[in-house]
Amino acid sequence: MGKLFGTDGVRGIVNKDLTPELAYKLGRVGAYVLMNKNNNKKSKIAIGKDTRISGDLLESSIAAGFLSMGVDVVSLGVIPTPAVAHLIRHLGADFGIVISASHNPAEYNGIKFFNSEGYKLSDETEDEIEEYIMNHDDVDNRAEGRDVGLIVNNENSTDRYVNFLKTTVGCNFKGLRIAVDTGNGAAYRVAPKLLRDLGADVLIINDQPNGVNINENCGSTNPQKVVELVKETNADIGLSFDGDADRLITVDEKGNVIDGDYIMAICATHLKKHGKLKNNTVVATVMSNMGFEIAMKEHGCNVIKTKVGDKYVLEEMVKGKYCLGGEQSGHIIFLDYNTTGDGLLTAVQLIAVMKEEGKKLSQLASIMTSYPQVLVNARVKNENKVKYEEDPVIMEEIRAIEKKMTGQGRVLIRPSGTEALVRVMLEGKNQNELNILATDLAKLIERRLG
Image (cartoon, rainbow, N blue to C red; front, side, top):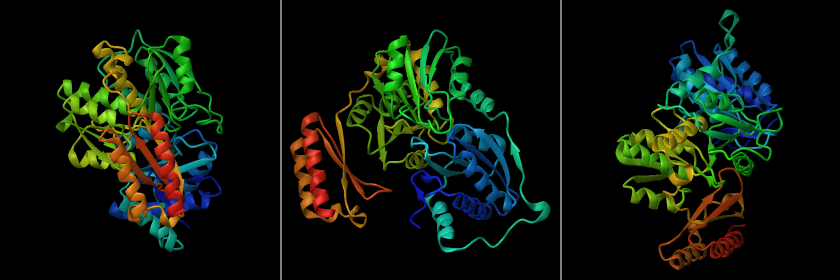
């Protein structure tokens, strides 16, 4: 068995990589580890899921694991990942589970854990769970008789989450026409209800999940669908969510895609203007565009960068007591309100800036200009994917490329966490030149490490 936990929980093709047997073990071992950290008191866990057909299979399996350990289960039903993070605290749960594979196709699913404060588990705790599953047959205790856990279905989870989100803004959205693509995912009920409650005219697509159409040519990884809807309906803004609604990609009234870097830049400068950008700092990842850094510097905001993954952004935010951070992909964290990337929270915060500033999204987005980025994958031997820094030929070529860019571009090499790949990302001013340089560098890495 390979490594279980990636950057966002345990994920794989259902009944191949992620089986009900593994989900059951995750429930039992997860309960064992987390209850020990909870001084073995009677515990309660909240479980939510997205719209995948396999959600019921995995929920029943992992719930059985928890129940067998005497842990009560609150089933939240189909609901966004960030709603679970919020409701854990609201319900007084000791930990939480989300069953989702985010932006991946329907045949994939995943299991991610949250602690009692709504934060994803630390790498150390995940390693502890993983080590036990991989090196032991089973945990050595089991609830018996009247001590087994109970399942309670929570019928009000969506309303509670919507009501919470409405409290985070101080204006209504009357007069705005909003185009929404829910990706046939977990936001399909929540998004239209939230935006209509706030007074917006909402036009919605891909809100008919059938278990297998989640993220299918729609959602945040396919924003062209909402681009077309914005243009057809003259909407003021377009919103495109991924399968579990923890990320958001937006579209301005002209049909231009506005990614996470732009959203962070807009919200950071608005918060700074009102004295609410804590420690005058935004946390981003190494994938954020150079144009974002330049814009933040011009507006007197500091930028701290982490490795890719919103959990690492969050760790830095907590450590430095910052309130805003995120990823270019649309995972944005407003730590004053929630403890994970939250697409719906991001949407209402951004729209509130539009209303309060009295500006169109295209005007707000003019705060920054993106540099072209090119990403090319180099296929290598799995054991070699972290060895590029040890290869003098590869390192010499990287230095030559950086010298050629004369300070107006950069090279970022990133080994894949799950595949035998090295990701080559180049950023600069000339798209055609970047394509050639990135492709040639990827081929060199394949020859040297493949």
